Length: 343
Image (cartoon, rainbow, N blue to C red; front, side, top):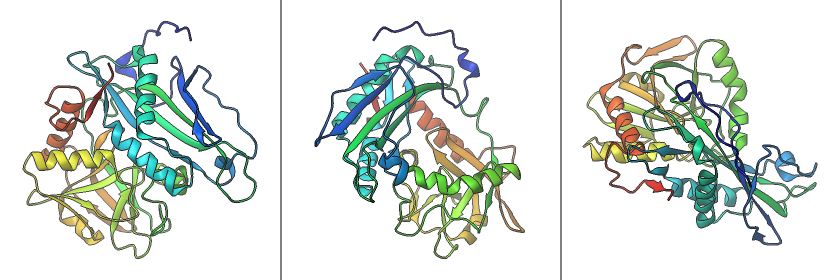
C-alpha cells in the first residue's frame, strides 16, 4: 500500500478523538484459523446484516498507547497485558481468541505503517491503539458466530490535560449499575459501556465529568468509575484499590500499584466501603487515556464529600503519575520491561 505523506499536524492542539491515518490492520477468522494480516485504508467495514456482534454483542476491545521516547525509540506500553485481557474476554464471550503472539505482531505492524503519526517527544502526545474483536459471521439463533474479525485502528492523541493534572468532581447515581455481580464487569466488552451511557450523559449535563459506581448487590462498596478504576490514598499514605469480581482489571492500575510499591508505598487491594471515601486524603480515576484523574469531590444524592482541594493535586498522586509517564516517555528507567520496542 502506498503511503501518503503525513499532513502537518499541530501536535500541541491534538485532543483525544478519531483522526484519519494511513491504514488499520485486519485479520479474519474462519474455518478454524486466522488469516494473514491486511492493511486497509478505508475506515469503514462491511459485514453481514446478521453478524453476531450486532445481535448478540459478540464484541470486545482494548486501549493501548504508543510513545516516541526521548532517545528516539518507538515503544508500546505493556501490550502483552492487553493481549492477555482480550484473550480472556474472547473466551468469556465465546469468540475466537487472538493468540498473544499475533496480537503483538499486529500492534507492531500497524504502528510501523503509521509511524509518522506518532507525536514527537516533548509534545505530551502519543499514538492510541484500539484493538477490536467482533463476531462478523451471521448468527440468527443465540450461539457463537462462525467468523470473526480482529482489527487495530490507530490515531495520534494529545495530552488529556493541557498543563498538568486537573482535579474533577464525581457523582454516584444509585438508580443505575455498571455491571451485575458475576456478570461481565471484569472483561472489556462494549455492553459494559453501553450500560453506563445514560448515566454518563446525565452526569455531564448536571456538571459532573465522571460518575462512580458502587457494587450492584448492596450499593455499600466502591467498585469503579464509569471508564476507569478507583484508587484512594489514605491519610497514612497507603494506596487502596477495590478488590471485586465486577471490576475490570486495569493495566494502568496494575502499573500504578507496582510503581507505588517501588516507591515504598503500601498497596492494599480489598473491599472499599462507601463510608471510607471521606477518610481518604486523595481519590483518583485510573485509565489509559489520562493515567490519573484526581477527584476532589463526590456527590451522592444530598451528601457531598469533599476529599481534597480542587486547585491542588495530592503529592502522592502526582508522583505516581510522573513515574508512569516518565517510564512511558523514556525519562525514567524501565526496570520492569513494560515498554515494548517497535524496531
